[in-house]
Amino acid sequence: MSVIITDHSRLKREVDALRGAGKSIVFANGAFDVIHVGHVRYLQGAAAEGDVLVVAVNSDESIRRYKDPTRPLQPLAERMEIVAAFACVDIVTCFDDPTCDALLALVRPGVHAKGPEYTPDNLPEFPTLRRLGIRLANVGDPKNHSSTELIRKMGTH
Image (cartoon, rainbow, N blue to C red; front, side):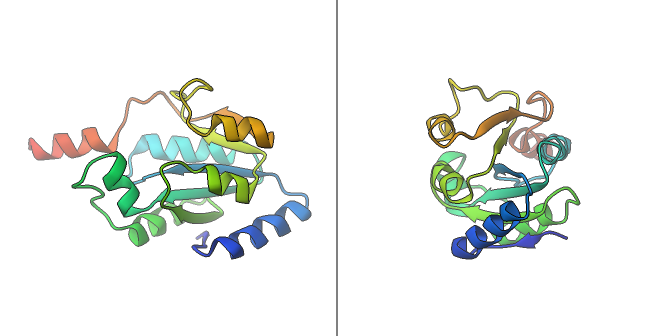
């Protein structure tokens, strides 16, 4: 199981030590509310982009703000534990901001992995990536899977 680090000062020390040991850092983020195969492919694709995969999970409140006031279905601690159970994930953290710009500046990964639907034109963090010299890597499969759609289908059965 990966390590879960919610203290961002400790997170910075950990990634700095890993970088100092010559490891390349990849950053991925998401809500990970109802895990589906799209999440699996996204995280595996992200992990393939470097040596260490850091995954930032949206806080409960941030999900309520940007997705739906009735979400998430699972609390942050449980969503983080689920993501940490993936063999390809090394570090799990969380964030409450509308974007992960502050965490990207803190972690300073070599790569920010996002799904194929994200481009420099629609990724809110892209200016931060450009400013910090972080490469955008599109990983995973097309957005054919979604937690929202799974929840909708469950409600009809």
